[in-house]
Image (cartoon, rainbow, N blue to C red; front, side, top):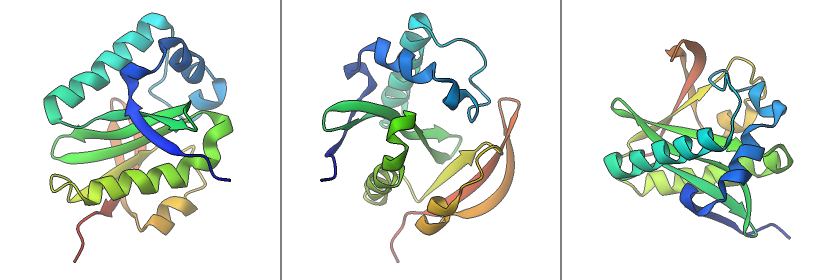
Length: 159
């Protein structure tokens, strides 16, 4: 049976869970912006920054739960005039990525502020089949905070 997926605010998650998640070396391999140890202080600053997005933009990142167990975080962050979607799952939850992404994109399709979603993926990410199946198209490379990412775009407006 598939686990029940639920989105909640990052403030509902024990910061220690986020530290354990973000300290997994398998994540760092695909997160070029994760350049220093992720400790409790970093986790608190991270959650505060994501909450600031909610305050400023009315939307931000969630914590993802599968059967009420924290499996990762992600969501929408306004980058200029674009809404970027990010997804960072615990390695044991990688198989839930497509389901969580589809739920988030369904949310975006109902939100008139989001005519399209962008995805910034590090060059280390080679398996892009799920992204292509969602209908995202490659737009080119983009520099974000000094790191190069492959940028994809997915329209959310229905014809």
